[in-house]
Length: 163
Figure (cartoon, rainbow, N blue to C red):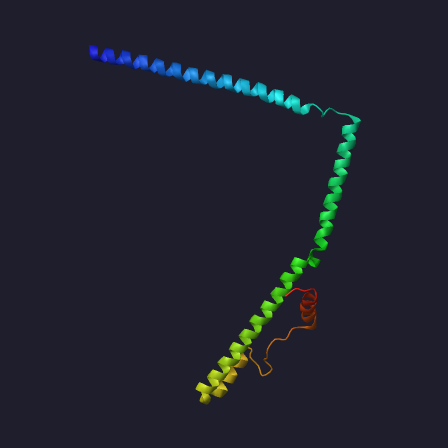
């Protein structure tokens, strides 16, 4: 029985000690928060200095707003001229060249496949011709040539010294 009382007493003492420690920590945190609050209020007051309402400030703010509006208008105008951007033009030229090369490479592959099928399966010539027509390979199927506009784009790029 005495052991239980002793344990209960020790438990009570340790619990009160823990509560005191928590109280000290909370009081310390409160003090730190109060100091930080005072510092922030002072900093806010310092930042407000020079921002008092005045004719000069209102004029400067109006001028700033006008400059921002002009800046936004110029940005919108630049979007209209984005197609004339040399980098975009060069990327378009390269994309045309890549697409043209890829189309002709596939056309060459199709011609090679047709030749191989004709050589290896001469008895199925009629069936092969029927299959070619079904998938869109007609007698007028040929390599892709660049349109005059695409040739002009590539030529203009070459005249400017671009590869």
